[in-house]
Image (cartoon, rainbow, N blue to C red; front, side, top):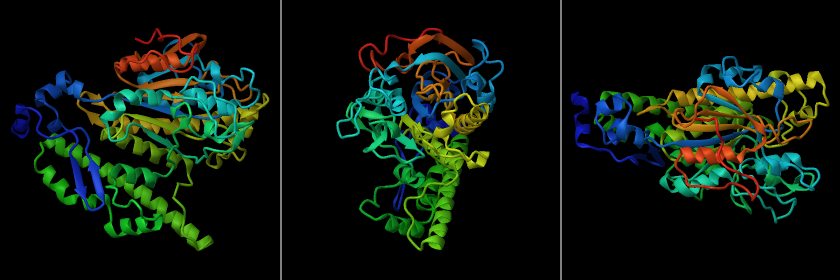
Amino acid sequence: MSEHRELLTGQKMARRTLLRGAGALMALPLLEAMLPVTALARSIGGGAAAQAVPKRLAFLFVPNGVHMPAWTPAAPGALTTLPATLQPLAAFKDSLLVMSGLTQRNAFALGDGGGDHARSAATWLTGCHPRKTSGADIKAGPSADQVAARYIGRQTRFPTLELGVERGGLAGDCDSGYSCAYSSTISWRTENTPVAKETSPRAIFDRLFGSGSDDGLSSEESARRRSEQGSILDAVQEEAGSLQRQLGSHDRQKLDEYLTSVREIEQRVQFTERSAKSDWKTKLNLTPPPVRPSDMAEHIRLMGDMMVLAFQTDQTRIATFMFANEGSNRSYKPLGILEGHHELSHHGGSQEKQEKIQQINQYHVQQLAYILQRMSEVEEANGSLLDNTMLVYGGGISDGDRHNHNNLPILVAGGKGMFQTGRHVIYPDNTPLTNLFLTAFDRMGLPTDRIGTIGDSSGRLTQLF
């Protein structure tokens, strides 16, 4: 009990405590020493401890539709057995809510002809029918993540975090007369302002842990400085050691686990950079561009780890993550699939192509399972990071061959206590997806009555509580 004595008089350590070093600012996870509660209050998981832990919201997007027969549970109700595509989530089935019947009606053509891929991404979080243009007069949003940021974004260092693994331009024609901005982002700050995603693990790592002292330096100069400084943990070692000596045993363990996690992620980023640098020197004798892992699974997992760190340290409470751009024609060679994803999605009823689509879908779900696992391992005062985060996973196309935007593949993970999970819920066809966002906002205490254009969001979803 003596090790927690300092907690008895109330909050001792500021929630925004930072470890500082040359070129580094390291935010900390929520520790007991930051809570105005006793160790006993924490152990029963209630009171001020629960209130002090923030709720987070994440939107994870996958393109080109899914093979719905292998995605959809056999019946409504308890998730006793998961379908093939969702099998990697078996360990988390009690934290899942699979939802059928949800629709984004404004992703349909509505007289605009082709361009379903662009519309599906642009509409997914906005509920708005995008203006068909490949010029500068783009129009969609604002998106659900940015709407949420209006209320809680100012409480964190970064109002939102936009992540992805495929680069994409915000100009040019990418889909039947629709701007590339529509298919390469799902986040819109305003109806005319898409928010570009970051695809470089190094850039996100430096954003989370850098002091800004590299501003104005070239990428090569920044890399040289990092090499001279060594690990970020070396930079903050003195302050970290001093802090460790002031903490109780539980906080010391929690801080040690956090620092170990940061170092492990940093080493993976460094390994990726060394590999790319070696390849470029061998092939072209040039300085490599910003590095992105060639292995897609590692890329998704690294970016997912960054999102977890950002949530864990309360640097943001809202994130979007595109596993690939809408219409992506990337092949999946690790699965033995040489055809492009978009090409396969136009399966024309071919059983062989649909089986490959299912493999790609399951591959994406495996990466989701990794992210959920990492979140479940982060202990917080009233459960885990996963318990305090609601993740919406899915896409804006159901069957890629039909290009339909009704009965979308949507699931919610995490958010303990926000929804009654462990179930498959079926809604009438054409129920607005935006109603899910409004319902989620209610559970987070965000006073929003509409997302999307008039005639889209129509209320809150039932059967969730």
